[in-house]
Amino acid sequence: MTALPISKRYYTLVGTILCQFGLGSVYTWSLFNEGLSSKLSEPLTQVALTFGLLSLALAVGSSLSGRLQEKFGLRTVAITAGLALGLGLYLTSTASNLTLLYIYGGILVGAADGTGYLLTLSNCVKWFPERKGLASAFSIGAYGLGSLGFKYLNLELISRFGMESAFGIWAIAALALVVGGALLISEAPQARGHAVSAGTKDYTLAEAVRQPRYWLLALMFLAVCMSGLYLIGVAKDVGERYVGLSASVAADTVAIIAAANLLGRLVLGILSDKIARIHIISIALACALVGMALLLFVPLNEYSFFFAVACVAFSFGGTITVYPGLVSDFFGLANLARNYGLIYLGFGIGSVIGSIVSFALGGFLPTFYLSLLLLFASLLCSISLWPSLSHRTTTVTAH
Image (tube, rainbow, N blue to C red; front, top):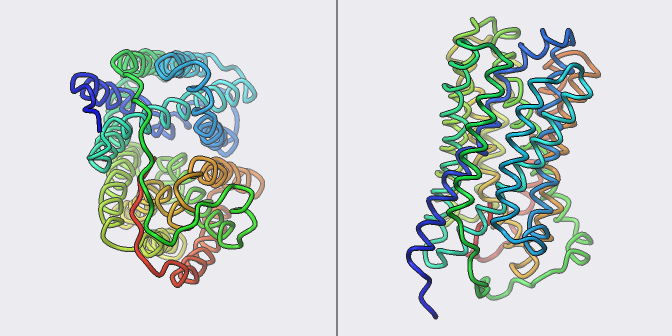
């Protein structure tokens, strides 16, 4: 095997970390919902739909990023994603109605973020074929830390300069990180495929979708994404309006989510190399189920609310990390991008469903109840799939 250029590898790693840190900043979105609601004189539930659209656009952008890379090259696409992200955030500050908010803050920001996210992450992993897990951990960790770091930055910006100026400064910071990181990145040489354990057939997408277990996996993924993304998008508002926390204490929920999300990615990702991935997903689903049950059925204070939110965020982060490998366990590695790509649309669809239910039925609770039911059904589905994998498989995680 030809040695990979050391300088390009590590410049790419640093560049990817910078890109991921800037891209992860979108998970602080709930800090701005209250201000946007006041500015536009629109109900909070309608404003919160922006993050659902952002998540849907993020999923679509991720699924198309590979084709864009093939056509225009990785660095060009990554730089364009950074410019589009900055533009979208700036234009969000100028939005004068819900339609413009949905276009700028939802569709443009989400599509840019998703394109840059999956593109830079998968490329970084290819540069480290002997240390894929470590490269993934650095990239995934940077994305999680981006939401944590920008939580404090954006709170300070809102406090000092107001919401509209905060959006503008956030736009400049995110753009600089993503574009600066992209300039350090080199496209990885074509990597040789790594075999999956003997006995795993490589399914095409057409073959995979004819398998009932494919749709069980899709339901499980959608359930976790709906509960996680909806709660991430409205966490601060739930803390204030539903639990009765002060604005400053409720804002700490963003940091709790970021830390739990990151912990879930690292802990469940590491465990998935030692325990069957379908068992890991069952653990993640059970964790999210506990969090939702606490939100719905237990009198909440500051600490019980933080714990409930942390359970859901931990599950979401871990599921996102483990799922590419899980899909390859069932359907092989050769067509993973296509097979996982269709399931990954549940990332955005789940978030939009959660926001629409909240808007249509008026509040947070209807979405929480729907999430609880879907998580319970998904846990049963995951347990039913345990016998399907009689052997442990090892593969590359691509998210």
